[in-house]
Amino acid sequence: MNKKINKIISLFILLVLTITTIDFNIYAEYDTSNEINTDIQISDADAIEMAVNVYQNLSTEAREKFINNLELLAASGNDELLKFHVENVDTNYNYKEVKKVKTLYATNSLTLAQELSLLALPKAVEYSLLALAGALGIPVGNVVDVIISLGVVAIIAANWNTISPVWDDIVDIFSRHIGGFVVEGFDYIYNKATGLPTERQFSRFNYHYDKHSEGFKFMPTGNGKKPDKKKFWEMAKKALEKTGSKIKTGISKQNPSRTVKFNTESLEIIIYDTATKLIRTYYIPYDEGLVSGRYTLSVVKMIAEDYFQSLIR
Image (cartoon, helix red, strand yellow):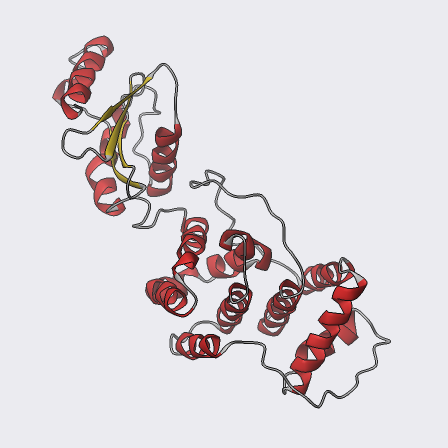
């Protein structure tokens, strides 16, 4: 999709969001679905069809408000969306000059836009983030829902190598100008774009991966291979969520806000801080006997059980 079409679609959806109510399912704290395909390709024709469908789903009143917003935008000097509407949606549309122009963004959003421009982002990404800023500048029920509705994730994922060095700056800009509530949404974007957790989800993830991932080659229920980072994160989320007769849970001796979970079958241990909602560590407790095969599996499980008991009160 070329940059102009990408810009038009993002702005088009932004205007629709300002006059419609969105109702989506609420996502769980840890979304275990597969990450999106970062190589996704959308043709210009598909993008236009998507925009036309959005417009056709508007009520009569919503269409009138939407057209009014298009006219105000055109009167302010940007008529690309109105031209898009005439060329692809309503060829019979009759444009009437609008004399009084109202701003579409609050003052703080303009400041946000100026700060984003200093990051030298790809134009398609910058426009999409500005569209997101506009959508989040009005009352929203769930920030993740707004992000999904705008299609921001696909654009960011496709440009992740360029964006990643300034990602923390982007999150900081949005947090300062719009509010801390946006962090949840940006964590969602990061998870989907990279397949990895943020520091708000897994403390020192890279450190724990480097230290413990090798041990998962010896997990009794594993495939004998060291997991890559994405797989390690997915396994940690599943270990945290898993319940049943094979799961034992206790309170950490070191910190009463931390829960220790032990899977008696796979030998996985995960420590989770209930106060901060943060995974502290995740590993397989193995020693030379497990690695060398000197011990039988039943003995290994007893050793791991004793180790788990030493961690809890």
